[in-house]
Amino acid sequence: MIINIMPTHQQPLALLGNITPTQFLAEYWQKKPLLIRNAIANFTGLLDANELAGLSCKEDVQARLIKQSKSKWQVIDGPFDEDFFSRLPHDKKEHNWTLLVQSVNHHLPKAAELLAKFNFIPHARLDDLMVSYAPDGGGVGPHFDSYDVFLLQGSGKRLWRVCEQQDLSLVDGVPIKILKNFVTEQEYILEAGDMLYLPPQVAHWGVAMGECMTYSIGFRAPKVEELAIEFLSFMQDNLALQGLYQDPNLTLQAHPSDVSDNMVASVSNMLKTITWDDNAVGEFLGRYLSDPKPDVIFELPRKLSLEKFNQQLMQKPIFLALKSKMLCYKTACFINGEKLDLPDSLFSSMQKLADTRCLFVNHQYLNIDDLAVLIQLLHTHYLSGYLTFKH
Image (tube, rainbow, N blue to C red):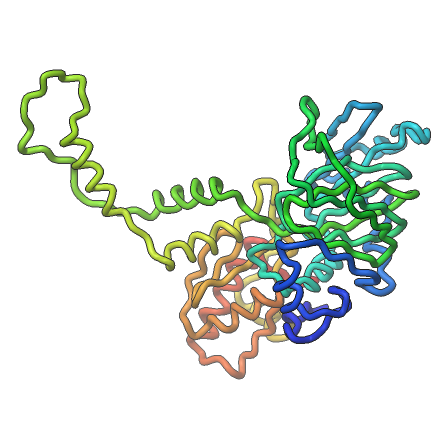
C-alpha cells in the first residue's frame, strides 16, 4: 500500500473532529486539548495484547513495564522473556501495571500507515508511535509530557483525567515522573477510535477500564539546550578557521599566572569570526532531526547488483524502510542523518520519496544522466537498509 501525500489543509477531517488541519493548527496545536469522538471509524487497534507482548520480547524493540505496588513504582526495561507476562500479578489489587512499546512504526507497516494520517504535522516533528497495554486499573500515574501527543484508543476503554495546572512539581524518589499535586479538571472516557490531543505540559492521568490498549502518536520538541549543544557539535565538524593565535606586541606582566585582558580581547575577536546563516541551521536540522535514535539498527537486504536493482526499479515502487526518516530543506535532502549528494534536477523525485515514503521511478521523464545518478543513489541506500521494495 502506498502512503498518500498530506491531505488538503482546507478539507475537514474526521480525524480532527471534522475541522480542517488549518483550523486545528490555529486553534489547538500547542494551545489547548481537543477531544475527538470516533476519530478513526471502526478502529480497534493494529495488534492485540499477545502480539504487543511478543514484540516487547525482541532484542531490537524498546519496551518498558511500569508497575505500582501500593505507593512504590518500578520500571523494568525489556526485552522480556516469553514467560514474563504469565508471572505478572493478576489479582485486582495488584493490577496496576502497564506495558509500553516504543517505535512500533519501525516494526509494523500498518503503524507507519497510521502515522501517515497525521501528515498535516511536519515529519521533522514526528517522534514515534508508542503502544501501551494495561489490565483493569492499570496506568502510569498522573504526569505530563514535554511533547505534543495524540492519544488514540484501540481496544477497550480508558478514563483520562486532564488538568492544565501550573504546578508541575514531582514526587521525589520514584523512577518515573509522577505529579505530586494533580487536580482533575476534566474527565473523558475514550472508547475504540476516540482520540485526545494534548499539548506539551498538560497534566493527564489515564486509567484502564478493563483491559485496554492505547496508541500514542508523539511529536518531539527538543529542549533548547539540546539543540544548542548538537548545533555547536555540528559547527565544530564544519569549521575551517585559518591561522594561529598571535601576540607580537606582548608586554611584561606583573603576574605571569594572569590571563591578560589583551589575550581575552584578541581571542574574543577571533571567536566573533564564527558565524552561521539559515542555510547552516537548515542543514543541521535536516541531519539532526532525521538521525536515527541510538538503538535503531537497520537490517541489510539481500544484495542486488546495480543491474538487477534497476530491473526491479522499473517494475515496482521503492519505499523508505520502516526505520528510515527523510527530510528536505530547500533543495537538499537528508536521510537518517546523511545529506544526499544529488543534482537539483532530482530534488522533486527525492522530495516525493520523503513526503510519501514511496517512489515509483518514471524512466520516461528523466534524462539518461539524471536517471543514472538516481539509480546509483537509490541502490547505495538500498544496500544500507534505508530503502526497500517491500511494504
